[in-house]
Image 1 (cartoon, rainbow, N blue to C red):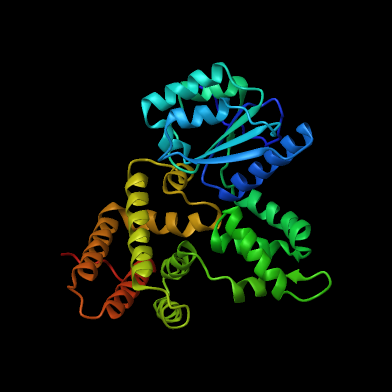
Image 2: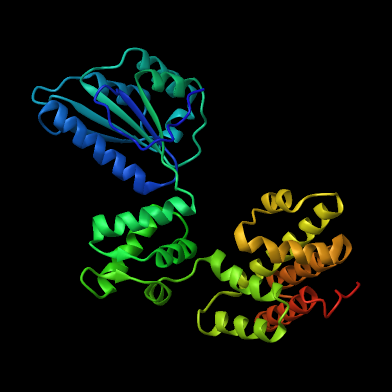
Length: 345
């Protein structure tokens, strides 16, 4: 089975079919521009571009465009959007596989999908006459490095490393979103060239749901009920975080504690449990330490109570959802701090 290239994409005019697959729309757009520019340089003029929608285009229409000649055009660029929807039909998939066996020198076919692409014979057929390109977001360290280079190259600004780390932490590794936020930050930054620091990121970039959740999880794990209340009220009153996000964070923490405690009792190691729970870096230590101390029985009671709270919130069983959440957060903080045992039902 042909694998998507993990190396940076480099256009080759000999490619007849190019599959761009993955959810990173920034890379899709960048690679498509590279293809158009490469074809223009190779053929001495811009290609004639034809765009089709995979969900509504039939095979005959697509192949007719690829195989037909125009009087004035030197090369065709045919782009099929949502290619995953197109190849879900078996006849379409087989038709593309057959086309790959006898492509046209005068046309380049680009298949684009951000959806669920099911690899198979078609990937191998594409790889023989072109390339399968992964358009996935980088990991956190890659996104940070990309931000620092992109800020200077595209936005004529400097983003400090801690600012880039905070930006990625707040909105994730989506290059499209990072680029949009850096454009905004570069305009607001001062200096010549403008310098984007961590304070500016804190001021202008809203935390993601995951970071908002980790804020309450981290103070709860510290076992400080007073700080938990202060953090909870800041999230609600200042950041306007919805109850649903805080509820998700508290239930998610209880789930991690229960699963961690259960795996410890089964003989699991810190490294294995961290990987299973997707805990990385400093985030893992307080979760693992609390899970080990609680044990499976107490962690199960805690998770049961958290699920009951969430059901009450969703079903209208709680008359004041904010007060219910704050009360449970305090109980959870006391339990994590070892000052209160989870009530037995």
